[in-house]
Length: 267
Image 1 (tube, helix red, strand yellow):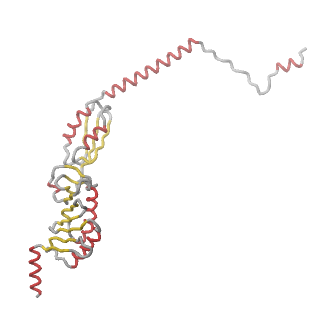
Image 2 (cartoon, rainbow, N blue to C red):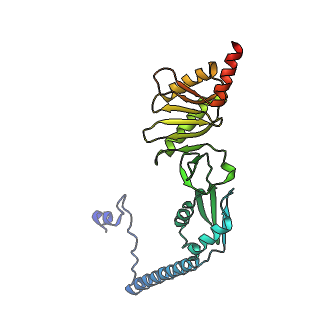
């Protein structure tokens, strides 16, 4: 007869699961798994290395130059860049290509990119002259100077001159003054800034305007009142506004003769 204690031992304890058997991996199999994994990694690495070597050796088959340009020769650009892309499609330094081209006079900006499988594309934006800077070159739309040979196409642009470093500020001043003079019908031909900061304007009619170094807007407003009320358009050679009030007006010889004749006729 079985005792109650033995029966209790044979009954499963509630809430306790039987333990799963533990798989035993032999040392040989463990070594084999590691060897196979290592070999696979070596093969993958070798494949990647070989593929990278093939891509690095890929030569540039096409060098394309794009952009709406007038002063830049696309064939000359291609010849200039050819030695720099000779190392290969991936080895070519695109930043170096941009730097090389941005040093050219008529180049404003450069964009370079790779196009698979073997093309490098260069897009150029040409400088846009807005004014002549003395006899040295031009100012672009941002007032930045660039040295370039003269092009008759831009001979009608205003001529700005001033100390080195004043290019941007003088371009802004020109734009401001051109707007202020627009109602008078006068067009600025030259705008100069001397070492003392004094501004002189010469119009396409030949008349000069001395504005000094301060209160430029107020002096232009004073000139406009004089021009609209009293000054004959063809008779004035120079107007000096460097006074607290009023202005000194110099008439041309032809203009003075015309005014004298008018006064005699009125008398």
